[in-house]
Amino acid sequence: MELSAATKARARQAGWGDEMIARIESSVVTEKAAANLSIMHIAPERMDKFLDLVEKMPAQVGAMTFQFIRTRSEKGVRAVPGPNGLGTPEINIGSYGQVPDLWPYENDTPLGSHPDPQNYMPGSYHIFDKAEVWAEGVDHLYEEAIRERWIPATDLDWANGLQELPEELERAICQIATVYSSNGLVEQKIIAKWFEPISYGFHDVKLFLGTQVYDAGHKVEALRKRAMANGGGLGQAPLGILYRGWYGALKFTELMIAVDVVYKSYEVSLFEAAGDMVKTDLERKLFELMLRDSKRHLEYGKRHLLWYQQHKPNSKRTIEMWLTRAENALSQELRHSHGEKEALVVLFADGMERLQAGVDRLGTLRQKQLSDYLALLDGLGIDRLPQLNEGLGRIAEEPLFV
Image (cartoon, rainbow, N blue to C red; front, side, top):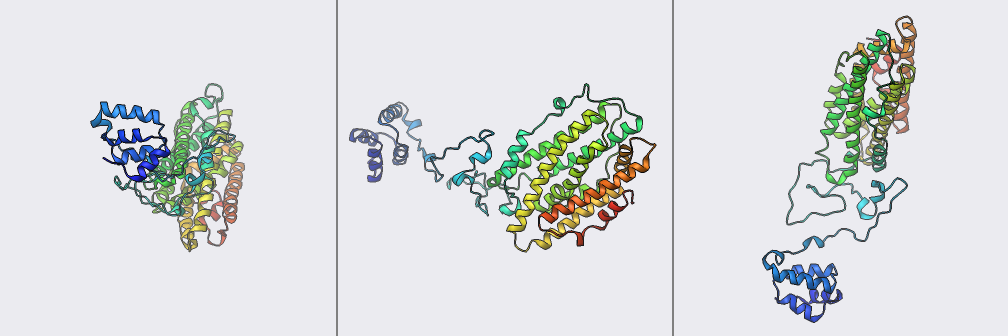
């Protein structure tokens, strides 16, 4: 076999002399393999050892082509660690950080790579539009989630952080734990369901969503442990109207509006108010940790909704419809979930003797939840007040409204 002029030229650039070129031509090494090895600039002494191996194992080694060298990916990239180490933002550089508006591959091709046209098998992905999932700085949110991870078994002082509580207070906090552990379980399941459809090219989003699923999982764990650790036990299950709204989402963005915007806004405001209702050091630390996670989920929801608005023309009406559906599910849950609101009244009242004070405090919370939610949307350029779900407004005025 005689090597082509181009391959010979590359071979000479790699420092291979005429004698070595002749040795290659007399061996079972293919033109393709020789060209690819020359592109790698294999040093002459190493090439000699390779040819020795070819002579010993012609069938095995001689069949190799080293075609993986023929990549169109950017070379010579050197990621530099940042203040928190070598994170995902540090490796999102050059072409490896350029996420196209429309992902072109149906298979498991990673961002910055390219598929082999000879071996291309489409996968099950069907979300290829970046606007459907993206959020500015999602890689930073992922790194933040990794740094702030916590372990319910060891980061909470189960041995010394609890104390005996009056029966009604113990049962009330366990009821809240039951409701929000259930919310966390459904949040975990429903978000995980969307991993498969999201194209591999949007891996930063998939990484972040993985942390939200994990956060929801240890919310379930920690709240169930709290219910079981101090004699109260689990309370009544939530109604589940809220979840029907989540499961009914036909688009990923609709789900994120329902979970990471509407619901998380209300959850964050509740967790922020936990200092006024919890009775032990362990509960205080628990709600602080869950609040930190929920704020991060809310931040992704806000950033994604903003990105969606900016990159989806004529999306205003669709967003309004999705907000309406999510608000309706939330308002129905808050209105008819007697277990949650009565437990909150007892906790805010610090017992059964001052229930009116608890009702007043619950009213303050509902007003703040609504105000925070509307302010969040205002910040995204969405004036929601004219179309706000009537139930959310009524609950803010009458917290025990049914």
